[in-house]
Image (tube, rainbow, N blue to C red; front, side, top):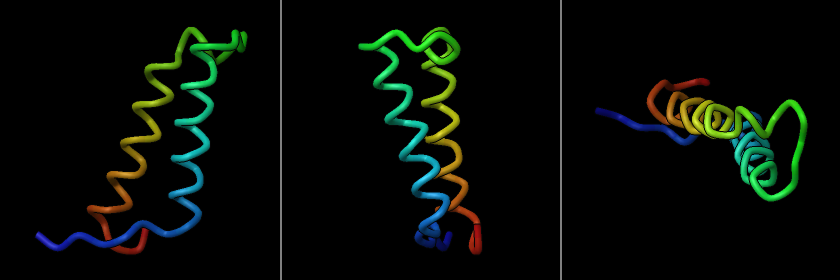
Length: 56
């Protein structure tokens, strides 16, 4: 299995999603706080897709 580094854009998107989800645990953000787990999971899945699939 060959892994590749994700592109900068995808890395930044996953980073923003992770920071948003973690921040919403400590600071109430109306539309984000109830779904913080799924937002964090989405960021992780996006990052994993960037590692597993070349060119994403």
